[in-house]
Length: 390
Ligand SMILES: C[S@@+](CC[C@H](N)C(=O)[O-])C[C@H]1O[C@@H](n2cnc3c(N)ncnc32)[C@H](O)[C@@H]1O
Image (cartoon, rainbow, N blue to C red; front, side, top):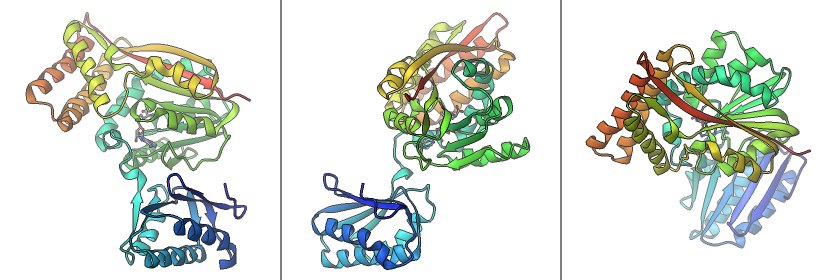
């Protein structure tokens, strides 16, 4: 990395024709920008076709820096109209895209791309408002198990904790109330879910949870700062869980632990009507896989943590059932799944009405099993954690 000041750096990756600018770029004079502008000019001069300028982790930029960069880029556009310059930015840094778009407005061969507006196939479903009922009902059911499980994985009072892909923040509020962490960051990439989370936290008078909009696969959080990092039901909805795990590892302190939960949907079960239920959940696994998500990930947790460099790995599984409290709560989870999986995802995949009818039937039979006075309904989950080596 070419650190050009204590607070910012610039680099060129000639394999990908990518200029990477990172940090807080707040020079007091154009002189302090010379290293950056020289590198950008040299990199552009030596490249043809398309050059990418990656500003995904350029968190701050003052007008002195912007003017210097804009001059070099505009000059390069005029000199070589056949070469495309693509500025790749992120929705997480709110000022960035609007500012760079002002530059693109005058340059036909310069464009701005917001990389995290459509960066993996299942993103639109899980970030949508209609996913909120799923998250709300699920955590209500899993907490009674996880409350007992978490201390076995090292969670105790007074730790610094991050819940990555926090959804509507209900898990974070439970952590706050039951484990009273010294610091609690909860990060997600759904603005709708975070709005909901902030509202719930305010209703409960919990004002110390740091709800943060961000991309879990490219976080702006610093290295080595959390004792305990959680990421629940979320590695399984990423097409590249290894990238996400690398980030969880990075922000965890040496000696700290990363705790993940994942499902194996095809193992959801119920009696009576075990056959229709089994068929439907096998289809759930296939449906998610169509959108590049692996809801069969649970038993793979040990391998994933191992491959990511963790040691002292612990894995356990638990079954959420209709006998855990009010069976209606279990039925609510299944109805929320049916609405999104059959009502939206199968429709988006283009499934015919006959398939959707049969698909829905398995969820309805699962609800019936949950509410039947002699019935049994289950949803298996794998909880695993690994320690970041010292
Ligand atoms: C299945 S939900 C799980 C939410 C929560 N952990 C829970 O168990 O209730 C997955 C969450 O990941 C979030 N998410 C998806 N892509 C993300 C990304 N790139 N960065 C941060 N969060 C993301 C979604 O917005 C969603 O809230």
